[in-house]
Image (cartoon, rainbow, N blue to C red; front, side, top):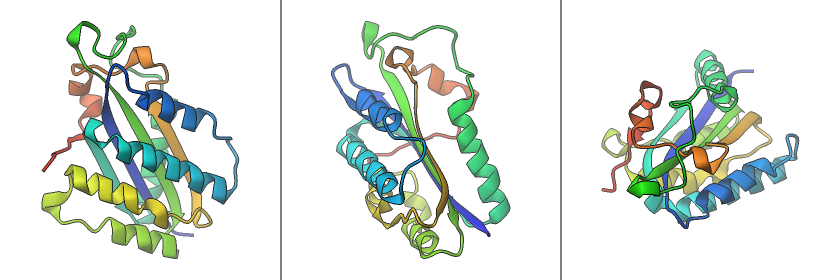
Length: 191
């Protein structure tokens, strides 16, 4: 089987009174490790609804679609490893959002390894046909998220969803985001 990959990661600002982190964290933590395609689709739909409703919090992000088998497998492993590595930009908690007037951030990641020959992969590829000048626009992220209803988990070999940080008191700082490890996250433009 040849594989395709779709992955999307968003860096979102945590507002002091927002439930964004806790909603996404609960969605991921409460989802069973093994579930049906229908349950996975419901999780995806819930994540999309939460993210689109909080699009004003989008700060940075990236997304990719590749239907090259070798790259899909390599990139999927990379996204999965982002969930299990314990490396960080600092050694101590950063505190609650807006503590001392400094913003805090989180990332939400989803990645899907698909059968490259499936209708699902073709539909996702079409969804990802975006002119270069629109790649890193908020409207593009919203369009792609909103279009993920085309995801058919019968064609998905493996998927991963995760939230960083796992504990809100470890929210990323603006300084953390300047670290080399976060260079792949592009600034998201409003217009």
